[in-house]
Amino acid sequence: MLRTRVIPCLLLRGESLVKTVKFDQFGYIGDPLNTCRIFNELEVDEMTFLDITASREGRGPNYKILQEITNECFMPLAYGGGLRDTAAAERIFQIGFEKVVLNTAPFERPALVTELSRAFGSQSVIVAVDVRRRLLGRYHVCGKSGTEEHRRDPVDWAREVEGLGAGEILLTAIDREGTWNGFDVDLVRRVADAVSIPVIAHGGAGSVADIGAVVREGHASAVALGSLVVYQKKGLGVLVNFPDRAELGRALEGAA
Image (cartoon, rainbow, N blue to C red; front, side, top):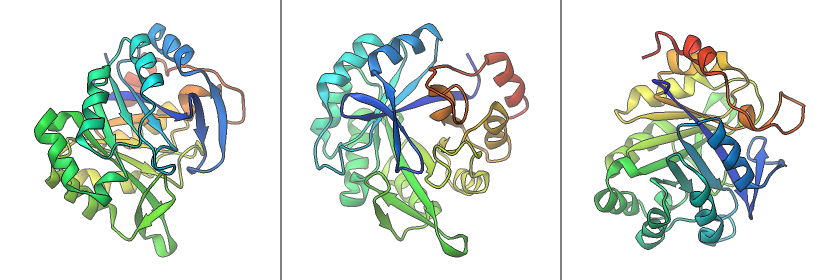
């Protein structure tokens, strides 16, 4: 097992897996259950599933497909999408997920983060902080899969959700997501250095070297991967895979 968590982050759209670019255009990846079977064989340590249309469509989680996923997967799982109350989160845990991911709900009802943390433990609550870079290099936090912009600085918002009880932050640079251009290391470092809870860097990984850089230079506690684990290479077709662990170990050497 790697000392630094490297987590496939898979996007659900309906009952299919897709991959977006900058939270916009998307490509079809495949059936989530077949993908789970492959990651089982690759002995991945942890996975995250995000329903990218649930909040935008004003609906809750698709419990049917989530139950099928937990029946298939052997590793710990996190789920986000359409979670707006304690009952929905409790059902996700009952299905077999270990963590829930909140993005839109904390803006609408911040107390939900605290309620879930008290009910299920802060280690079970991840807040997804999706960030878009604007003119003059300013960063704004977004909700509803990037479609709703909040004029909040990501560092301030990260500190706030930590105070509310979040156990981890999933930090996504929207402008890097799906581009293969590398993480926004400066953004990750600013947020990671401002909070005491783990920050999972997401958005832009194009190589194992990028993973090492965001951990060593960005002080990320973990890394979430999208394109790098569902495509052969940039511009090529779908291939569910996972980076070579020996290569990852070398890239992450000295990062702890």
